[in-house]
Image (cartoon, rainbow, N blue to C red; front, side, top):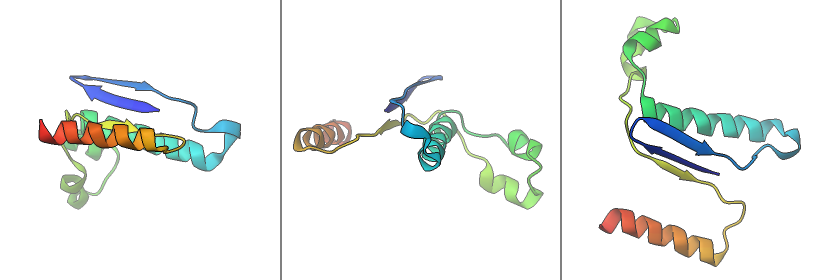
Length: 95
């Protein structure tokens, strides 16, 4: 499963995580989708207030979006995949 955010669009291609209808897997998948959406689009104070949130909590639940992010999930982590992930990290950090 790979998520990527670029510009103003979120693209998600998912490899079905909830095989066999496992409830925990589907909750995990939903949490991943919400995380990527929040990082991409953020949440305004008007949106938080529309959810009937107490006024004292609104500033703590408001955040900006438009933050590029990647999420990569692997079923297994063989040495080749680990090396690829380390190379990707080094490329992002050192260039």
